[in-house]
Amino acid sequence: MDAAPLDSRPWLSAYAEGVPAQIDAPTQTLPEMMTESVRRFARRPALEFFGAVTSYHDLGEQIERAAEGLRRLGVGHGDRVALVLPNCPQHVVAFYAALRLGAIVVEHNPLYTARELRHQFEDHGARIAIVWDKAVDTIAGFPDDLAVEHIVSVDLVAAMPLSKRLLLRLPVPKARESRAKLTATPRARGIVPWKKLVDQRRLPRRIASPALDDIALLQYTSGTTGVPKGAILTHANLRANAMQGRAWVPGLAEGKETFYGVLPLFHAYGMTLCLTFAMSIGAKLVLFPTFDLGLVTDAARTSPPTFLPAVPPIYDQLARAAGRGKLDLSTVRFAISGAMSLPVATVERWEEATGGLLVEGYGMTEASPVALGNPIGPTRRPGTVGVPFPSTDIRIVDPADPSTEVAAGEPGELLIRGPQVFQGYWNKPGETAAALLPGGWLRSGDIAEVSADGFVTIVDRLKELIITGGFNVSPSEVEDALQAHPDVASAAVVGLPRESGGEEVAAAVVLRPGAARDPEALRDFCRTRLTPYKVPRRIVLVDDLPRSLIGKVLRREVRDQLLARR
Image 1 (cartoon, rainbow, N blue to C red):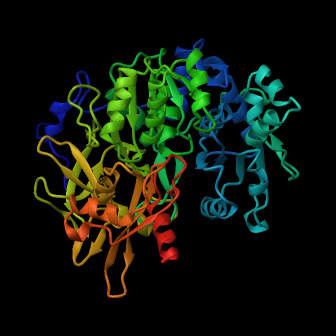
Image 2 (cartoon, one colour; image 1 turned 90 degrees about the horizontal axis):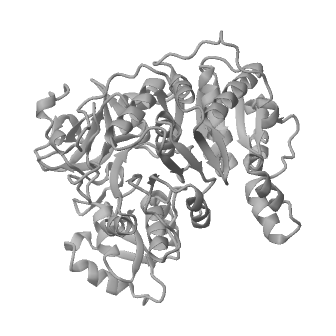
Image 3 (tube, rainbow, N blue to C red; image 1 turned 90 degrees about the vertical axis):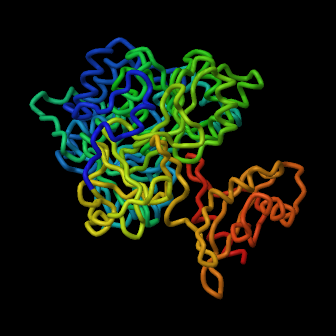
């Protein structure tokens, strides 16, 4: 399957004015990109954390000193450096310091259990870990056969302004509670404090930068199998995706934008939009260790956001707060949603509150992660994930035979090709071969439909389709029907095995406060919107749904819970 010629890509006519069909090939690695930003925007603010501001000049200095600290710990080209950190200035410094040495960054969720973290460390074998002090004892407690040689402990409070640090030391319950959420004193011995790591001279100039095709990042993902594995992303992959993002929003003013880092930097979405894209244009990145409406409201008073990447639940919560007069969002010109379906009602609520645009995009870790987006302009189409990014091609194929394209307008598996597509999975050649087809086409594992003018609608995950009575049922379609009921706050639909074979459609439903607990009434409502085989055979009322850290419903966990109840 060869790339389509430019004139046969119907989506190009939908591009916003000024967006090119293709981007130039990257010529800078990520540390080279950062060096240029430090030079161009030296006196401008790069980071803000609880009001403490770091300039690009100072950020560059910290990166070079941290790189020298890591070099003295033995880190060199190709070594893995594990980051187990929430959003904080030290995270940004550590990310670029490791890359400056040609090392490979491995991002981790600091709230993972010891078991989850151990699986990943067993896979990538990092000898150095830079860790939030609340997670240090978890890493230090690994068995001897997995012992990490050096653990650098990071105290988030140390990056705050002096006034905030003093308030957290007050002998009152609220201060103690806030401090306990942010920091802890590790019990483990032999830990390297972050301050000691960066208390070095600058990295010697003779240390060579990595090459474009060197591995920059291992980003763990469940992919299409549910088993976490490390996606291999090169400097060229990540730099290309940042360049594609920059091209997609031609209205951005370099050196003048304020990005809000409410998405975790250890997630592919937050990593690209904030760690690489924002830094590449000299933006000020306001960092939040976790999404908190109060923290965002406080920050917006002094550093109003202009660009906000987030997920639908965050947009919804912020827009409602703005509607109550608690928050001014009028400065946000651009907002890009990803990771889950964006309801049209959320778009309308957000744009009424801000006067700016909220558009949906599509990505996956294996694509660095962004591959498609709605145009930033009048051609956008709510309800779709948009059209392919510059230099990106797509195909819709038969999932059982990906060499065969389906008829126009018919659902099929989405394939992606572009400079942002990953190089494979770490130490997993078999799974790499299954995900990457000849010609560099990435199997997304998503079932999609494409309109005649190139707009893509995601129907569902291939592995989450429910097969009942020989028919395929899209969980998203059933969830949309349930969530149209005024009493339903949220719903998750899965397939449960039947003794007779196949699956039955089952739903876990969260009701709005005060709603009547009547599953049969919900089934009757679904019958008015769905063909009979799609109507849930079982509806279970629950208090909440299991979600990822960015708010995405975890259908696998929903399925396990419903099986346990049955």
